Length: 516
Image 1 (tube, rainbow, N blue to C red):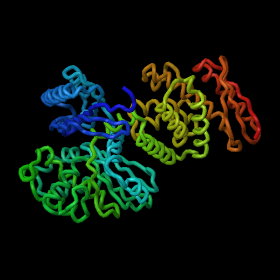
Image 2: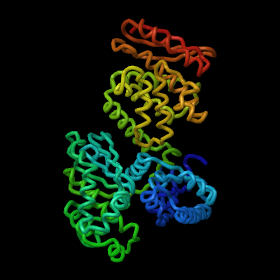
Image 3: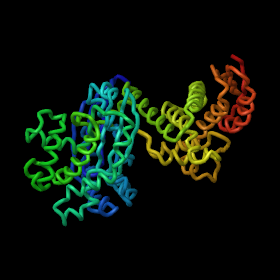
Image 4: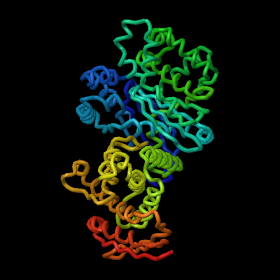
């Protein structure tokens, strides 16, 4: 298929409360044109949050739904699809068995994604829906992405992502955690609010002096809340909920049962039951800002998955904007752990220049280049724990993080690259390395070898490398470095770190220095 051709693709979201699928045509500019959007309720989230496991009956019903989705894909002759599972399956003790049964019954491969991957895809959908997003991010924007199992907070200022925080409190989890109390008290809404406050009391302190002028809410629950506001004439805008309207809708939800809401407003019971915890969460975050209300762009994980497929296929502008967001969030993570930003930046520049000049040798792509860049920024975070053997701690710290848009496998890759940036090299007794598949092990070694060289050439603050050019011969890679100052320490450091590079690439690194 040529790049200018449209293609039909499908995105399946095996969610916590609903299973849904969007089939769409994707154009060369990354435009998504939906053809079909279907959904059905599921009990998997309720099972997981209540019992820790997904019941057999829920799994069978899920397989039945996904089988019908697979048939619809055949009807549309869909060849490209992505199916993902979120909190409901992700946190189930029997998730691997459930995923295997889905594969056997439907032929569909479902990938379990983490919280930040989920938010990343929703952000792609959001960027398609809001035309003035850049202006909002300049003035101060708080994005609240509410899921069934948790809430992700993204803060933008001066046009870039400033920080992210994750709270393991979502609409369904909040209700299920306190479900027993609902049956014995009439003050259940107050108890929900008090419990939420105990989990996010730190919210006001994380703003770092930023006055957020705008709030965007993501999640189907906000759409339902807006619908109630619109039907009751609390608000005229179906995509924006003013502060006063938020209070009115919240009061309405507090004083009416989920059964009555479902009946009056033609909602499914599953949807009605999570309105109260959802309104409590959105209201609390809104009140922590100066925003006039919450904007609801009507995004979906399905649309974001399709947007991501379009980005990968057609290399859109949207793709590069989100790479910048990822890098900015990683830089903030480095500052959080007190890394030497000047040193990390020098290492990053040198490593990426080396990577770009070795394209014909390593045969890696732009995603692998991003892994290297992230590892460069974070390679010294382990010093926050202990400067002695910090590379080992760097790997541990990175594995414990969540990086926007990165799968758990990708975090493991970056953690390994960072761990091997100094003297340590991969060994068969290193579980962190051997747990990777063979292809990822080779990739980690290739990138770590480059990082070792870049770090070795930036051992002193007194040296400023002005230019590096690589000359590749059948037996050697010559690093031609131009810099100012005495290069003796760097020459020694380079020699001490070339063995692993030579072993990985089968080429001998040679350093040639020219004074500036």
